[in-house]
Image (cartoon, rainbow, N blue to C red; front, side, top):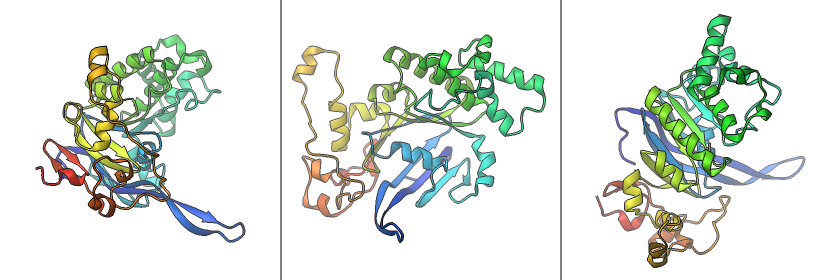
Length: 332
C-alpha cells in the first residue's frame, strides 16, 4: 500500500473483522473464525468518491460498518479527519459520527414507519442537541428536504406513502442533517428501479459538488460505480485486490479477478459483444471460514502459479494502479 496522501480524509490500514465460530451448548469453544474482512487498506481524499466493488459476500458492507465502528474491528487502524478512532469509546465516537454518516441499502427498512418524514429527517438534530430553537429546527428540516428534492408538505407524511426513490432521498436528507464531510453509501441504489437509480446517483453527484462531500460508495453494479467514482477498489474474499483511478481501471484492469468482472459487463454493441474475448471465472467462491492459502483467488485464476498457491500477495504499485498480484510485482 502506497503512503497516504496529505489530504486523506479517511485512512484505513490493515483492517480485519473476524467473527468467531463456536461449538458447544453449555461451554462454548471457538473452533474457527470467519474472516469477513482480512487486511483491507485504502485512503479516501476530501471531496472524492471512492468506489468499493465486488461480488456479494466479499466484505464490502462489513468494511463500511467497521469504518463507522458499528462493528468492532479485530485489528487494524481507522483514522478519520486526523483522529485515530479505532479504539475510541462510544461516547468518544459521538462527536465524530456527526461528521461521518451512512446511507443504507434498503430505503424502507432504514426508516421508522411510525414516524413522520419531518421527524425522521430531524432526528439526528434532536439526538445531538441541535433542536432547542424550534423555529431554526423546522427551518433546517425544510432546507434538507429542499436539498434532496422533497416538497415541504411531505414532512407530514409517513414512509409508506413514498416511492423507493423518494424514501432514499429521505434517508439522504437525514444523513446530511449534521453537515458531515463523509457519507458511507452502502449499495444505496441497488434496491431501486433502474430509471430511479440514475436520478439518485445524479443527486449524489449534485450534492457532492454543492457541499464538498466525500463518499465511500459501495456497490456491485460496475456501471453505477463507473459513473460516480473517482477511484475504485475491487474486493475479493475479504481483501482489496486492486485500486486504481476509474478510467485506468476500466481501460486497463490488471488483476485477473478485475479483468473477469469487467468482462462480465454487457456491451451495448452487438458486434463488439460477439467478438470480444470472454474471461469466465470457473469454480466456486471459497469459504471465508477457510480461505485458500496464498492468493485467495488462485483456485479460480487461469494464471495461477505455485507461488500464488503458497505466498499471499500484497497491494503494490503497478503502472497507474495498486495490485495484489504476483504477476505485476515487477511493474512500477
